[in-house]
Image (cartoon, rainbow, N blue to C red; front, side):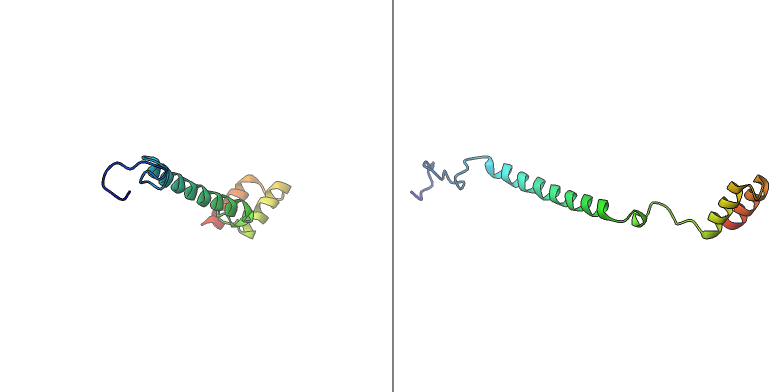
Length: 89
C-alpha cells in the first residue's frame, strides 16, 4: 500500500488527478489570478472620472478665454497667435 512500487487505485499518487494534471492546475490558477487582476484594473479605470485619467494637462483659463475671443471674431489671427505664444511661453 505505501510501498515504492507502482501505485494503483483511486489516488494514483497524485491526489486523484493522475500524472500531468498537477502542472495543468498550477497554470490554470495562475491564469485565473491574472484574469482577476486584469478585471480589477479594468473596472477601476472605467469607473474613474474622465478628468482624472491623466490624458492631458488642463487648459488654463487664459487660453480658453483667448480661444473664445478668437472664435467670436474680437481678435484677428495674428493677434491670437501672438497672445497664444505669450501665454504658452
